[in-house]
Image 1 (cartoon, rainbow, N blue to C red):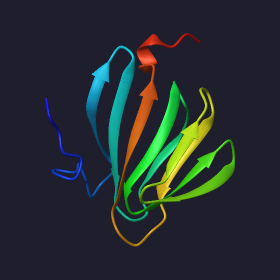
Image 2 (spheres, rainbow, N blue to C red; image 1 turned 180 degrees about the horizontal axis):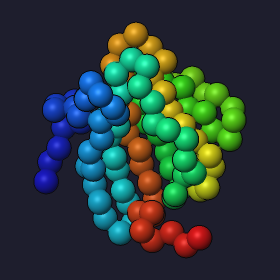
Image 3 (spheres, one colour; image 1 turned 180 degrees about the vertical axis):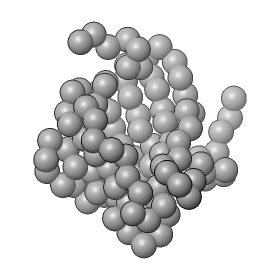
Length: 108
């Protein structure tokens, strides 16, 4: 099924928005939408991850180190890395979370 990541972006006023775009055994793609000041709370990466910023500015805190990211930036995140992401800008931000393999296939 064809999807457009710039249409129907899942923004929510009360919390981060998200949607699955691809959910296959070897690959999972999530779209995260953050209003200014919203964040993805800290958690450990549950697969091999890449973050791809589509719009806005975010700061990815990876193992305690801040990584400012903007439109077009692609940030790798190793399996089990502690990570949190916040919208650091004054406008809405959306990014893709690319996971390979799907976390359901990861051991440990």
